[in-house]
Image (cartoon, rainbow, N blue to C red; front, side, top):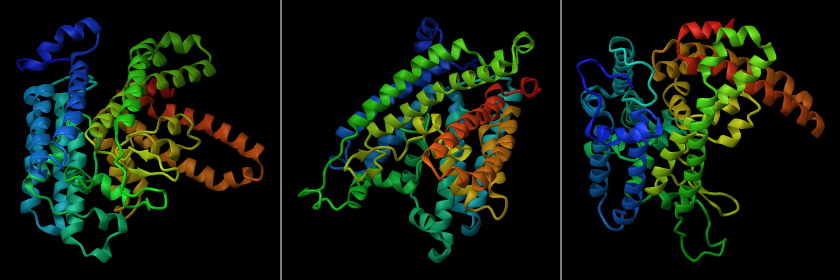
Length: 449
């Protein structure tokens, strides 16, 4: 990671981990991230066992989660973490000062505006370079939470229940300061997220999270005399296994197949079109493990704390995927562009739906993709990807609506349709997201040519 001239990046924690970074050949900020998340995982187990709702009050749980979250932010990002705290307090001021009908609009503009200014300053003014983990990552999660909460406060105070959808009515809230800080800065999600609903988080802190989901099932019919007590340990172990495999793939595949090679002049001139297309698919596959690693580890941290229980299936199995950010199987077997994006960065997709798609008066698909690009940052590659994504999404929808029914008359035709649409979907996604990975204009145009 490049450092700003005259402004030391390294914190105490970073200095301690520097030898490990050199030994593994991994950038220091990535080592910081992993160290914080592993420590958060241990703290989450301790939090669930010793600070359970039956042992301490919700005030203690809120305070502990907030203080540890602040410590993690400072440990990872040093003085840059002040951006996180400034945005949090500015948004709290807006929530208390702004008029109720406009609270969501002011919060949205301030949060997205501050995030965008940080993106611009980090990349273009201070010339930080291309980063894997940096202070804008947590700031992006905070922005999601602030805007989610602002819209839900607006729904809870500024609108009549009959004007809300069932989902908006369920999530309408009125937070206190401690609850607000805990929701935004808790140690389980301050580094890597994910963004969750405020009401779900408060139910978790108060010990109602699992109980509410269990009450949706008639346990007497299943032979239970009382409500079961589902443990997240199995889910955490499973997700840690996925995290470990993803880390191995990241350390091998990602370095073996660099994305820059697909726009190398010698490679382009000496390789056939089909070979280039095949290599594009391999390179895009090799870029995924770091996301699988970060998101699955973040999910495991929340589960270890007892947060993320989503309910019980028809077979009576407990599921801990309320906060899951991806479904790897559905991603790799997606037969439509819609299916792919619905299973990738799930919590961000849910946020975009809550604050934009469901509320946009016109062109909801286009506006949602544009907001997603703005939220991600100011690299030109992001905008190539999301503008292309609009066209891909509309084309995918049109083809599916007009031709899919011709292939449903037999299993053979349906199988052929699924194979072809899987192949086309995977290549379409690779073509669409390649600029997102390359970031800059020049390699993107070279790829398109």
